[in-house]
Length: 151
Image (cartoon, rainbow, N blue to C red; front, side):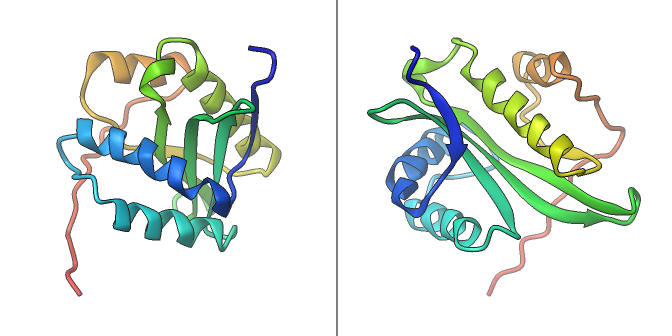
């Protein structure tokens, strides 16, 4: 499809981004889809680019996929790093290389902006792990843990 392009998401993209996240969180064990939460989180990023970037892969009709990168500081690295929060491709377009295109765009963005590392959490599925390993990510000896602070 020659009309495909990767570009920053905008607030106008919220409905489609929310649907992509709904699909993603419907598949993950740790999360439950909640459109209001997803809209709120996406809006927080889109309204303040210093918090992160959301890139979308789109054609002239719709968004095919998205990648969400959050900006933080690592004391271990001594500078700015990225947390890859979400990478999702619409179910009708999976296994077409679009996830790789989005990830490669994110890596190029990180290099261009001089970020020192990209960290992500992924389901412990061989296929998913292989995808990230193929793109140069390495497994960590660290174990992710969470503490949910309730308002």
